[in-house]
Image (cartoon, rainbow, N blue to C red):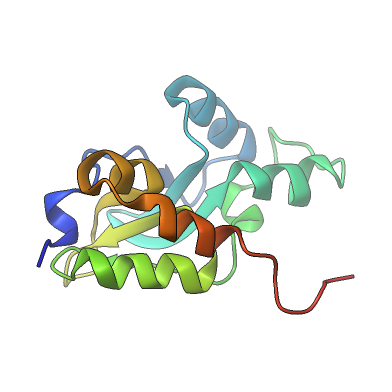
Length: 142
């Protein structure tokens, strides 16, 4: 059984609660990433994605330099413990239809991120997970 800690990305960039959406977008652009954890110290409290910025900030014409990233972040947080199996992480990603998953230790301190890229490079079998993540919802949203 492969543990998440064996394949996750470490030394993850993250935001503080007070950081702005503009800071989030700049960090995403500089790191060429699409999601950033938001932490209180090292404790995970949320995640903001490039889609969150587009939908919750840009589409509503909110000032990115003034709007806090935590106010635009995804409300329902998904995560896994670093000592869980990669299979558990895949199932969680599939069920929530997410491509990136924050990883915490047993004190809920951010220790890494697991992405589809990590699964593809290190596990070589991200195809099924991507297919499950990409399925449209059972009922269309209006």
